[in-house]
Image 1: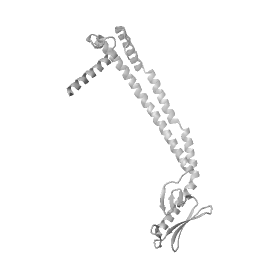
Image 2 (image 1 turned 135 degrees about the vertical axis):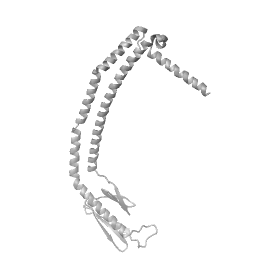
Image 3 (image 1 turned 30 degrees about the horizontal axis):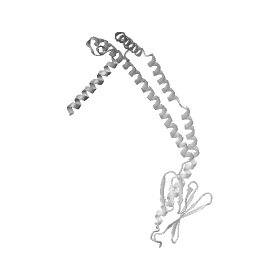
Image 4 (image 1 turned 135 degrees about the horizontal axis):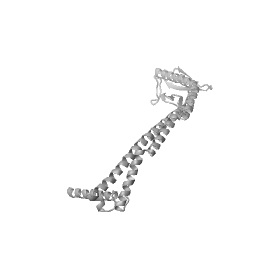
Length: 260
């Protein structure tokens, strides 16, 4: 069975080769296969190869110039996107990275969220004042907003008598979280103070980057130069002329114009 399949495969491949050869050297079986016309076929094949090699060389050089232009344009677009994203982050920093959570408070890089069963309240860190306090039953973190609003997060003592499902908090843990809030507030205040200068700097860089298209212009000029040189390449023109001559000679011989 394998031998039969191999035989069919060989016959199929041979059939394809015959059809290909008849197509490349039209005019009849004699012109495509006989030794009498071997030199004619060689002349046409040689002319085809020279023209193909010249075209391939031109295509490689042009492809390299096009790739360089694409790379320069992609780098320029990447730089613009990077600056645009930086400006967007400066204008709207969002919550930033999550820094920690304790009880009803969730601390982010630019925001503090106070949660309850009913709602979640975002509290801006900029200008916030946070203080730790402890009483007979609860530790507390008081949050004083610049507007005057005050919030209190409650953390029952470890020693407090509570229901079994209620959480208890060690004093040091609550104190440390209050310190983390204070540090985040300090960082946010510094960040906000730097935003105008950073925003001005980023916007200037974006303006300059948009205006600076010299690299793209150089790459486009290089591509145009390569394309012009390819069109005027005497070696390619000579190879194309030789192929044209060989095709016309084959047509004179067989009455059929061969494919290039």
